[in-house]
Amino acid sequence: MVTGSEAAARPQTPGSLDALDHALVRVLSRDPRASFADVAARVGVHERTVARRLERLIATGRVRFTATLPPEYLSEGLAVELAVRCAPGTLHATAVALAARADTRSVEISTGAPEVFAEFLLPDHDALLTAIDGSVGRIPGVVDIHSSVVLRLLLTANDWAPYDDEPTSVRRRLAEGSDLPPPLVVDDLDRRLVDLLKRDARMPMAALAGELCVGESTARRRLARLMRSHILHLRLHIEPAALGFSFEARFRLSVEHRALDKAVRRLAREPAIRHLVLTTGRANVLGYSSHRSIQDVHAFTRLVFSEIEGLGGAETSVLLRTYKRVGIVVGGTP
Image (cartoon, rainbow, N blue to C red):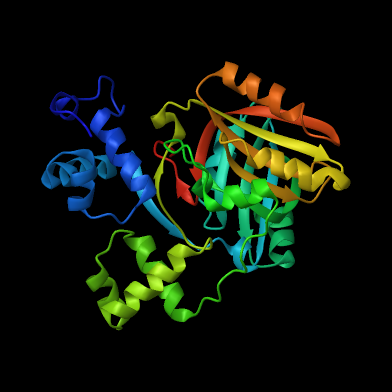
């Protein structure tokens, strides 16, 4: 519960979060569709205060609600990681151009070689070839492109829970070596429901039912079914830096195939990891982690990577700027 003095406090620096902001984010991270009244009861303030504060957080771009059906879980299309090497002086312009594309899900620049890293969602191999040899390859300043196809999606930002001590069900299963349940079969009604949630993740149930032209009980049942599964990612999004995680690391590991399952189980136990995939290529593990300091980055790489059997190589870089995340152009990017 937030005390009266905490609720009245204002951010000390532009864009920082105060105690009430953190309390709201904590509740809504766990239950993005919680009503104002429910959130107010949990944090100990009036629901009008909750409504005003959440409106401010959304209006300033500090938080937003997202809803996605990750295509990797549905075996739809290709998720591809591109490392786009650039001539000096063209990194920023290339990153902006890639972030503006509808087929990119994330774009960032990190330490290391002058490269822009972009995750593409493409329908097929022909589209990948067209992007590499055509539109991406023709961006001024691009001198080289390396591509890796995502073979398996392991962890996403949906599994990064900085406010919780307990792991998500996906992270727990992965750490235990258990398989995820078979993905749900989604139909047109499910997809229309998710499209509405993309537009407004907190749309009232009555409004969802009206837009879908179904009864409210049907809409509620469909949404509950999707939310119980791992294929719907309905979440509150906030940049890690706003929560005090100012350093984000990107790491690529080369792990022998005989030791890959064990390595995945070890990595899944690390709460700092917010994204983890298996890819094609010699470096077959790609991950991102969030940390409060550069010392934490060092401790993470030193302790975790040293425990991975069959590790043939590791390369870690620190993100310098994120241009796009979960399909959303990050504020401040032209």
